[in-house]
Length: 528
Ligand code: AMP
Ligand code: MG
Image 1 (cartoon, rainbow, N blue to C red):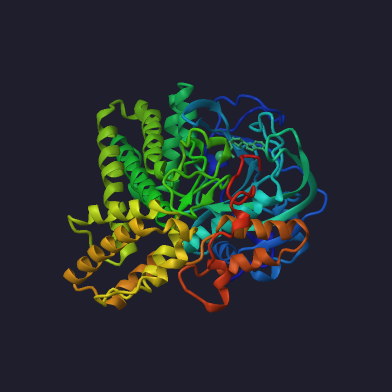
Image 2: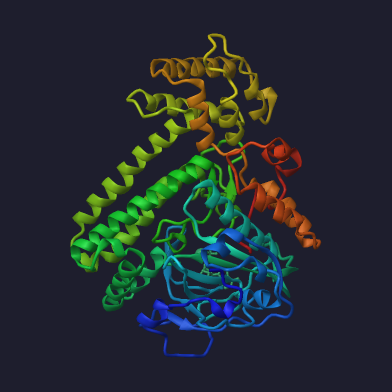
């Protein structure tokens, strides 16, 4: 049964009902103590206009397609009207930003609308990003601009179709308002079009939600929030107890390890892995200055704010996630009253587990059925090879299936397309590439892996279409001129990121030269 009026959505708002609310009702920036959230209405906007809707996400909410075009849809998902059952609130959290404790942060430009229960009894929290100020907005406006909203909308859906755990995006709506942004932090603010994305996830709980109560020594609220999270987001673990707290931390470690392995597999660099941007459900959350690897480079980060330190660079993501989990562990020590079990879990279920998952992922990328002892050297030598000259990671792995490894004298020409500079592909490089491919071939032969099996496994692991930074920028350039067709095209392309289609060749192309230094394509700031 599909719903064709938003007032028919079925809400059960556990977060606001079961957790303590901020008693102050004024929408002013402040420290919010002894509360998990503040009730706050979205700021009304002048002229809402729906730009795009992800029908797969509408399906999760049982929404019928017929309402996407309606005026009411735009009004509700721009925050101008609360549909029946919606309750608007911003939550309180803290976090470590770039390694430093930052105190209270909170939903500064996100306003939750409540929890939809669909016909399968699944819970989906709706959240508007960019719907105006809340008590957590600090010195900012609570708004979001079109370019960053396009990036969040397309990438979160692309990630889902790539098989990466992520928050989802239902809609992208223009507000008809102008928002002032200094994109390069160089004293040249410009008016940009305002936009709102409606994000959807089972919950938006972050590591920082637990950290803030621990930092304030509010252990009652810490316990209440942990218990609530276990009951609502992890009901399979059973009723909260000390043992269940440890099971819960184990589960968070496992899910985080899986998420990061996926990021490394597809070449996604989050850019701002602060603890407030880490989902307790192991979902990719908060798409800001993220980027996609073009040439494989463990040291690359798209975030200009982090260019110097490179704290969140590609090759560091696994270690940083471990550091973030350690901060979560610190926050819940008061509930467990021992440190050792948390350390053991972190080591086993994050650090070691990550290593195993990473090896399995690399084996899949190369088409092996399992990991063997000698494979580690093969993997690390490949990583060195990929970095030796500028090599497009996505293209390299797809083209590797086109090198016929059953032939004693395999033809490597399909790989040529993966390089950014043919000059770099010198004799020394060619020699090490040949040696690596020979070892790869021996490994395939020893395991009797057929070419068909190899290619099937590889093409199910290595996407051909990913939201390359320049593709998004082209869609943004057009959208800023009022042409939204490329947003719809990208949404369609990324629905099937593993299936090669001849008519979509241009979406698999490597970064063109013009995009190398262009803002938005290779360098992104946090201004959004
Ligand atoms: P982020 O780095 O985007 O994850 O944001 C860090 C913190 O800043 C969070 O508490 C956000 O809610 C807040 N924030 C980011 N942008 C804005 C904005 N334009 N207005 C208000 N708060 C913001
Ligand atoms: Mg954030």
